[in-house]
Length: 242
Image (cartoon, rainbow, N blue to C red; front, side):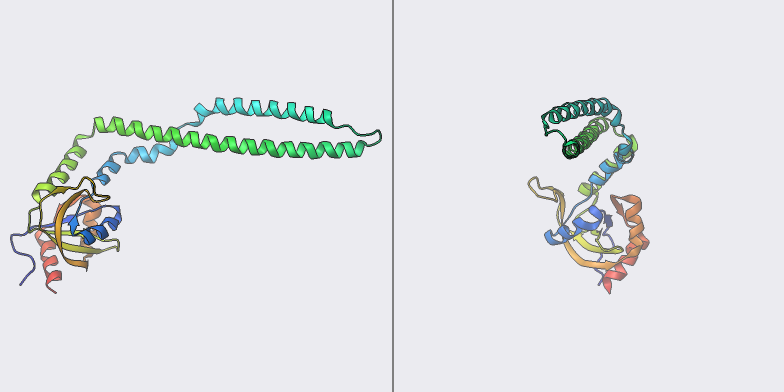
């Protein structure tokens, strides 16, 4: 007897993180869906362009002023140290050597100060870009493209309502072209205090690992949730009946 009844629908669900969440789903006897992938798509172009955000212009004047201060401080301290060097007459070579040693020491200190300043400016640069991301999130969540908004809504509604108890679900595993198959046994739940999987449906896992390469392309195209057509559903029947 087939494990799939004729009236059962079959759903391919992307759990996210390239199959990493699938392991947790199998361990907990649940399935989840990857809403975060939609958020990442919304910010895709902005993330790509993030490296082109110009923070150097805003930092240039600050850096120039700081280097000027460091140079003045270096010259002043070096001149004062030179004045302290007093040697008996006829010790010109020794005096020159002491000056060179002092100059080398001061230059090393200056180089270290410059290095620390550059590191600080890198942190400033990182901070500015993170603030830019925050601005993007605030602005984009106030207005989302209608097409993407519809896609998100359909995915969420499908997971909570269209997938019925008794339907089969297929999730991709970490190993490419391998999937797990289970049967839905519970309604949608939101587990507020769950460390990882908060939006879930309870599942009885029928096969924890099957080779089904035909589904890999669907994951790449649809990202979220898609109902398998009759041809793929029939192929799945045959795999499960073996």
